[in-house]
Image (cartoon, rainbow, N blue to C red):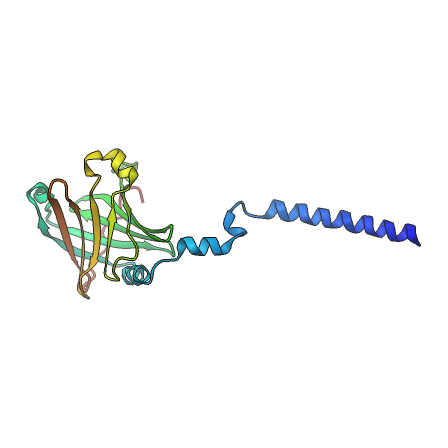
Length: 212
């Protein structure tokens, strides 16, 4: 009787070890699998930023025409016959806004949720889809900001590739139900530019941005 019980216990131990090994092999290699509350904390936004994010994503799939509303002399050559934004790809963690200047489809604004705040990066592409030499500049928004306006201060990467722009900050401003503004301020030299888009009237979608 004792021998049979010992055999059963040994067999049970072997089965448990086998099941444990299988579970370890199948478990995704991510810390969030073991600490989902940590993942939630990283993605959680202040109420003002959540409202801002949701208000932007309400326009997903739409394209809007804009104008150069204001620019200091440094940026005045930026003016174009047609300026269009296309809020083209939205997920729980990404809002992709392509910016089209006439036939130039190189500019992308990538708005993401990172480390409990919002991050804006500028993804610049050549016509063949490769990254331009100067790209992925931008920064994080100081939380909480406003429900209608978020600013994004130049981060370390921006300072490394564009040292003279260490104090740049970009902004996205939902001015009212009809107008969204985007632009940049460069305090060191007093340069600034602001584009305003009519978000009350969608227009035809532009071509896909280069590289997408």
